[in-house]
Amino acid sequence: MLKNKKAFWIWMVLSLFIIAMIYRGSAMPYSQQDIQPFLRAHFQWTSETFPHISFNYSGEQITSADPYAFFEFAVRKASHVMEYMLLTFMLINMFMTTILPRFFCYLFGPGAALCYSFFDEYHQTFIAGRTGHLIDSLTFDLSGMILAMILVFLLDLYFKLLYTGSGHHHSSSRPRPRHAHSEG
Image (cartoon, rainbow, N blue to C red):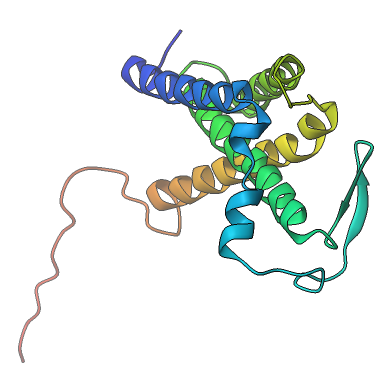
């Protein structure tokens, strides 16, 4: 059951829009998403441009010694965080328009986003030049989901305090009495 049918459908449409954008990006071959040629054409970076960082990510060596690949990796993973933060934000708000207790909204929003994240990584295994990595779902995507939960919680808390708290209680809608000031 819905508490606010109109808001539910607005959040649903926004969620589906983000899902469509994620799907579209994942369905695109890597060769069409490669930003390294653009970076090489516009920036003169060397292995000294970034602090030395080197790590293994899902069997691949990521290192700042190749600054263009390193920067692209950072941009791609940051986009994972952002897109799943947006999706989770919208899903939690969609669930909040239902009669579900708030606690479940905070679980079902990220739960649905995580399920889609798993599907999306699986889907990428069928796309030329792409590889689906479960680690993306469990690190960057999940980080975005957690950030969305924190953001919704803080906004929820802010509006709760704004409308019900901070020492200003208005229990009725009648005007407050004015105090007559006498000059004397």
